[in-house]
Length: 96
Image (spheres, rainbow, N blue to C red):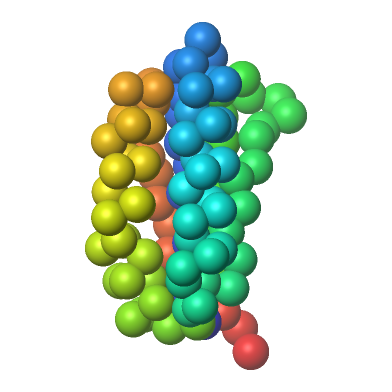
């Protein structure tokens, strides 16, 4: 399995818009990606505007499929104007 932690800095005044777009994206991921094991947006308790997406995929093909979906690309275009910088993406290998 492959884990991903995406850290996203969001403009505080655009947080509600960002959360709405991401919530819709998460519903699409859960409904259409059997290779996605876990997909959850979390919000920092100590850093305003800081979000982390916790993701877990069955394998590299599932991760590649996720990034290539039309709904992922569309959500990225909508979320982009809400961000306060480039996302930081960390890839992890599951310990089994």
